Length: 130
Image 1: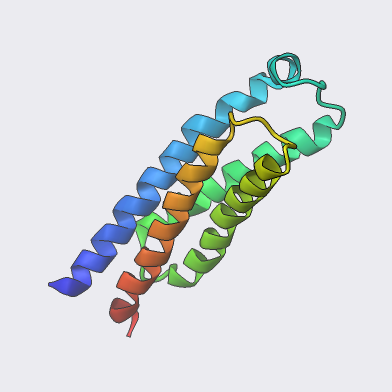
Image 2: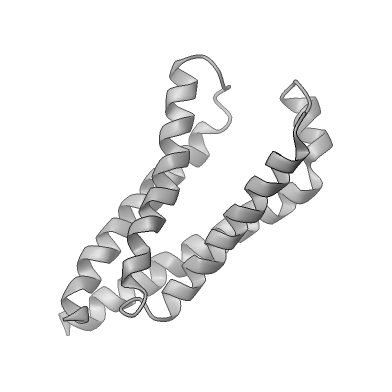
């Protein structure tokens, strides 16, 4: 029974993370000018901006793939933890340095939580892969 609980937990976590990320990231394709106005200066390297969004959306799709078969795709969970940690750590450090406003802090906190849940999913699904 415990084996299926780990798989079920990972499925829920990665499904929620994937859909949350798509819902949050996809609209940003249409917000370049608004972001430049609300958080000056304007975006000077749109290729980095759109590239970031595209790579992030690709990760959300991978989360949905992991959710379909957490045991099979368990090795991908560790890079998924790194994906969440890099944004969260970067935002926290930049905030402490006074280089970003507080607006991205809630998103960094969500990534901290999701990264932790990804790690828990990795551990819980480990007994099922043996």
